[in-house]
Image 1 (cartoon, rainbow, N blue to C red):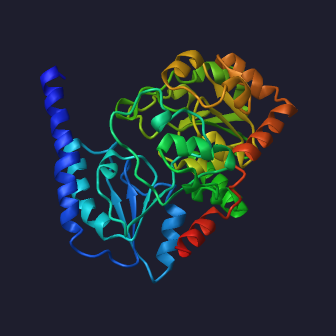
Image 2: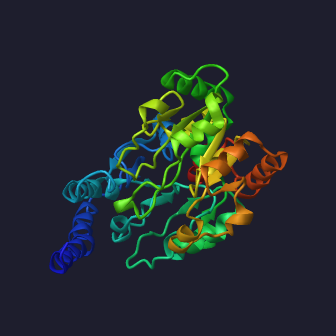
Length: 378
């Protein structure tokens, strides 16, 4: 994009954020807030995410509430479609008593949200791993966070990090658990996920499921996959006892082509919900993904394929030193990874348990209940 076109696009974006959107929102605010209207605002995707599912279901059960959902889909739709969806959302926002978000949003942050509307942030990640928000390596050039009624987090350990990263008062960052983690405490749900994944991918009895779920490189707007595990190398080392399910990050749009010769032991599970894959997996391989916090609740082995540790550290930055933070072996090659998997150490699971207690202590299967109770007291 030329400098002129980029400049014009930035001007247009500024006019939307600081002109059109606030003006339209104020017009909608002429009408009073609709008592009992609850809005779930999906900023990134075009479907209800696991961050909202349990809360959405709880509100739908109660006759006192009128539940709405708005899908902005800034990582899915064109800029034109996203703009149209933002304009449609403004009326719902102005009329809602409670609004749930799970992302930062420059659109939402640019609006003069009325005092009768309670904004609740249920962030899309547990714990604290990669630097984000105002703590990020890249300086934010505009406001991306509102003044939330409260933000839910997974433990006392991360309260200060979230308060600082989102520019919130510490008293409004509540270690009362993360709603979506409640499913990991439902044994029937966990067992059901295993059965469904085995049936979906034709995994025979006695096979071990290795979930490979790396995060992306770059930023959300132009996310790309990392260097992926080599199927031929890993298959040759691990043999037929393991089946690898690859879950690509939702922000990555390019598909991983798995060689046909490896299809019996490698399959692309990118279309599956991550919480089901976590419940089904015997072990998890990732790099710098925050899904390690949820997987720790299951107290199963984790391994880290971190071939670009130094480069990623410089680009993104972490809250904790990786060599003491990660609850499992850190591997630079497929050979190292295979040897770690084939020869697990008892101390590795001990590290997972310590990690869970430190970063997930507020997640006990009742987080959704506590969030509902907190709102009921207001």
